[in-house]
Image (tube, rainbow, N blue to C red; front, side, top):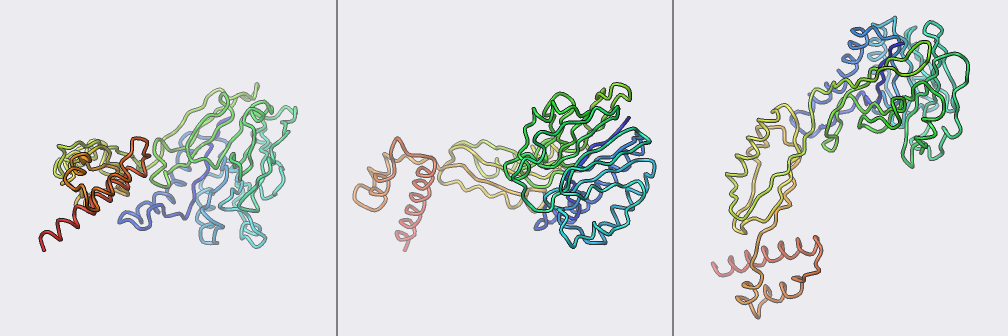
Length: 358
């Protein structure tokens, strides 16, 4: 039996709404379902599992119809869905009354229930969220029945606020495969059968690394997983770049370094840039010219001016600058105190220069 395991699609989300490429990202998120459906068709899978957060919020009818149409284009593939914390099923949710395509099976119960698919001798167990948080481990003590079927558990959660399960307990529960959602990073928790699929598209600048979904083959006789392949599908990557500077670095040099690195890694990707190191106090870094040309979502300047505090104290023995350095310049100072010292000295020096010029 062949299946594809996905989840955390967040259909309807716009990851970078305030950026020039925001509409592209919203389209990428929606298009991820088409990519998954195409892969189901290509690999002739029997089952598509959606482990929660198919939608970014409780879906409107228009979005349900769009998604249902895409699933209806693979009529030979059984699609089984549970709701996660984002697309939880409220009392007045359209999910309750919507006429899904014949091949789509939505587990709507808040308690664990199952759907038996006789054509592939497979039973899928799961439950849907009714509230944003479920602090109870609703999977505690769960066991797969010994019924001669391929038994699969479909679940969403894994942190303290969202079904805090024990991964080893799930690994020993007797299921052929445990398809998990909620964590957007793909990862195999136990052997080949307790798996987070991750999100098919990265959804914010912190979601670096690979994104896609899993293709799984389960032996019809032993009911064991015999093949587990991750299929990358993301249209872009969020990439964190750390650029180290020194007291000889200039803004022009920084612009060139960042531009070269982005061109090497791909101009279609989206970048979060961190500047680290000690810089010349006379140098200010400004990457705005690159932000207008490249997909730079965030710039964090953690560089610090390398002041000679001993010399400054000697030059300013009895004014505010000297007193300020004496109060904050201590060997045991933490990062925040050091930053406050640098920012404060910089402001005082500029104030002094402006007064001197006046």
